[in-house]
Length: 281
Image (tube, rainbow, N blue to C red; front, side, top):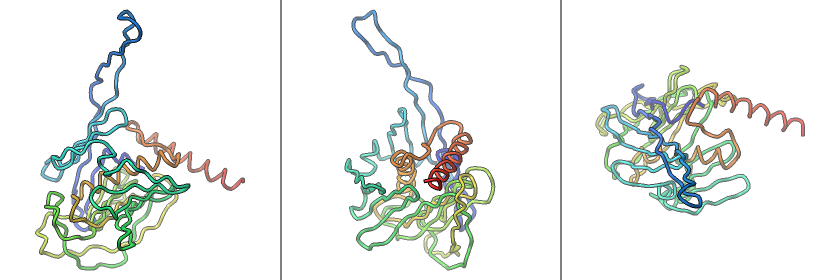
């Protein structure tokens, strides 16, 4: 996939950029560690980065400070903290082929990851509320009028709706609407959210997703339903963090902050090798 922490989120229904995600390295902060007496001081450096998510006006909605691979998250001026605070729990259900992590905004909403999928599931209604489509080709099947989405800076009491975001050529996100990115090679995400008043109606494209089964071929989409107790950007950040955790849990090609093209080539190589081993067993 393309670099999901340096991309644009595009609204499928409008074709407009809904969010910008930018990650930059920070100057190394020296850290002094003492070993034994004062004559054995050892200088080390801690790798630091900063990720921001902004809306079309340039307002910062999310700020993430990275200490190595550990995030410190702020969403809509609310100090969240690390991953246990983002997910509202330190409990992780480790099953042979499933990683299940709760959400902090709804006890019935569970992030569910497998080696091949990432979804947000509602156990109360027994329905999927979010899906991460990777390396797929989107085919528009029909158009259905739906209420347009409110902006990500709206109040938490907004009406629930359906959205889709797309990262061109690699990752796509969706929050209460359907979004897709152009078939370009640049990294970008599409969202079906718009900033028009929520009382108006827009035509949201209904889509089917055809997997290419090859990293870097096709686009990535994130589709999810809005929740009255969570801002869309919180769901987006949670999806991004869950994808990083999913890759680590199932020994997939890990996300790297640098050289995304090399990471994509390594992911392709690892996928080919896994298929060869599977076919020779």
